[in-house]
Image 1 (cartoon, rainbow, N blue to C red):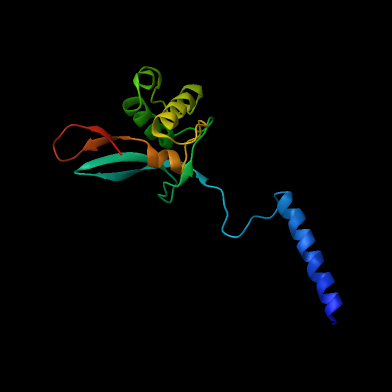
Image 2: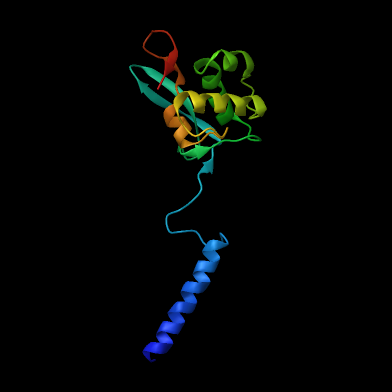
Amino acid sequence: MNLKKKLVGATSVLAVSAGLLGAGLVAAPGAHAASTCTTAVQTNMGSHYYANQPSTNSWSTNCILAQGNQGYAVEALQRSLRMCVNTWTRNNVVVDGVYGPKTAQAVRYAQAKYGTAVDGVYGPKTRDAMRWWSENYGGGSDACRS
């Protein structure tokens, strides 16, 4: 095969790939969306403190929650939003396992308070920034910990 045919073939492949990437049909290598949180895992917060944090079934805390999600992962998030953000969240967030408008509002309050992007969606950056309601298994009082 001569050089001209190789260049035309390679250019065609690049053009098709670029078109698919532009249409969102081909993901870049290593790029993937975070999974939805489905349960919670107990995380060591130091000094005998443990917090339940949303996680996937494979125990990864690199997951997301948004309006419409339900279950134990949402309950774990709601407990910390209720106890550790502000007076509004303490009075308005119900730990019921349903990520509704009040939970989304509480996430926005937490994101603003802790300096992350404010979008009402819980994800790894929100997880890392926020304080978590933590039980003390060493005999002391439960507390909000980061």
